[in-house]
Each structure stands twice: as C-alpha cells, then as structure tokens.
Image (cartoon, rainbow, N blue to C red):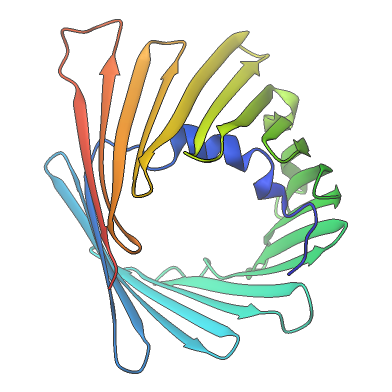
Length: 276
C-alpha cells in the first residue's frame, strides 16, 4: 500500500468528516445483501418531508475489476466500472448515466510515495477536463485542483491546498472559487483510547467579506457507540449518536436546533445501515 500525500480530496478530509459526516435531517435506510456468488445488492431509501427517494445498487467484483450498477426512482441507470491497480498505484474509473448520453466520464488516479494525481475527462466532443495533483509526503503536502471547459476555452475551477499531518493532528489550508474563498481547518485527536477528537473550520469569502466558523467534537461512549456535536457562528447546533449494533451495521439519530430561534421545532434525522 502506497504511503504518501494521497489525493487532493484528502486535504482537510479529517476535519470535514468530523464536522459534517453522518449528520442529516431526513429518514434514511440502507440494506446490503450478498448473493451466494458474492454479488452485493444495496437498497437505499430517503424520506425528505413528503418525498421518498430510493435506489438499488448492484456491485459485482471480478479479480481487480468492480462494476457498480444503480437504478433510482426516476429510472436513471448509473454505471461505474473501476479497475484497481492495472499497474502499481494506478486506478481507472469509467462511469456513465442512461439516458444521458453526455454523462460518460473517464478518470485515472495514480498514487505514489511522493505524489497523488487524479485526472478525468468527459466523453463528449467538447469535454470538461479535471486535474488535481498533490506532491509531498504523508506529513506535508501541497496541491491544486483545476477544471477546464474546452467548449468555452477557460478554467471553470482553480483551487489550491496545503495539508500538514502528524500522529494526533491534521491542519489544512485551501483557496477555493478562483481565490474568492479561503478555508482553514483543524483536526486534533485529544484521546485516542476513546476516539475523542476536536475539529474546527473557518471560511472567509472576499466578495462578501463573510466569515463562517464551525466547531465540533466526537467521543466514543464505548467501543460501539459514538456521539458527535457541532455548532457554527450562525447559531445552528447539531448532535448525533451512532451505534454499531452489529458488525458494519449502524443506527444513527441526529438532530438540529437553531439556538437563535429556540421556539422553532428541532429537526430530527434517522439513519439505518444494515449489512450481513
């Protein structure tokens, strides 16, 4: 396994996961079953108010090739074919959606001890080309994330980031939206024995001179139960409790309260993920 700076999407990921992952205000369930031949079938349903959205995903693995086929309630067919390590450190991903004939995209990822590269191109006459690259080590990494629209002949995205990683902390700095937004994040493991960690993220937007600050933490009550909480400078507070009631199967309850409008009802979300 390559030990290096990772991909650009890994910059700030620890803090993002602590602050935002698994929080939701909807009702969601996911059930995964396996056929005798090893085919994995995952059914997902989400209830958003009065709207119910569902999809079924089938995953087939053959040596180093994984094929995911998903059908949703709007009769869209999503297909993703992943080839893991046709060469050391290399991964290729091909995905498309039916009936959208312009949705095809080919992505290539390469991981090295001192670099991580990901590039994708749309399979159209005038594709959008995405490129992200990171150089450095597993301690210090710097990279950029670009998108170029060949139809209009200009860059539609230009981001840059810096990541610093130690055994108990991760700090990152990113410049997004063509320099209009700067985000700094911090993730610190306070006590590894009970997975207690603290995270913070602050974003400054130059066009509006607006600052957004989010603080959060997590703590394991026992080896199977974790609680998390976060609050931002607009007064929105979130909390969740997640319990692994069987291996890889989780039950999650999350809630949201506007501390500046306590009279409003709190939003409650439920999540159930079941794997055999």
